[in-house]
Image (tube, rainbow, N blue to C red):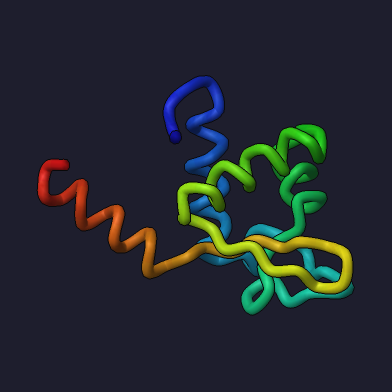
Length: 95
């Protein structure tokens, strides 16, 4: 999941989304904290295409580390703190 050539970018995404207002500019249609960050904003931050950003976000959401929220026709992503803590607990136990 987090391994491979993009692992650093995925870890960066999780870190940036911890405090999105510190890492992303305000969005017109969605609140960075309540709704999440758009794939477009993430693509700009990473310096990649929107498709690559959506792939990263989709993977992280697929394993439950991010939550997706639709606002209008757009999807925004934010951390699922409960799930992240749960996964961290498994690693602490030597999983």
